[in-house]
Length: 103
Image (tube, rainbow, N blue to C red):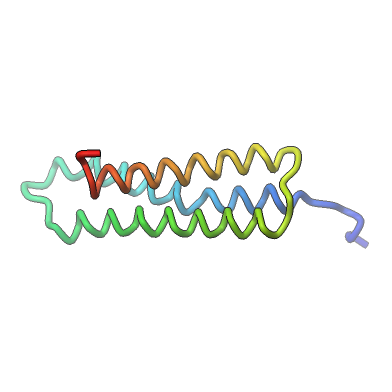
């Protein structure tokens, strides 16, 4: 009965692909807000935030590649694809800023 209702699955896949990088960036922003309250930042805490950024970047990139390979994006899915790519690039940039600050 509901098989005639078409949903834009490609756009939903790109929205879902943007979630891991955005979550990693939000966690990093929370860390950057709170770390100034600590007398000393433990190395494990710093590197765990860098690991979360790496995980968010990798999960986002994998989800984007899978969604692009599955279907060709058209219409609004192109906008969600651009948003997902920007979120992933932001996460990757923050990862590089954390691990290689001289870049």
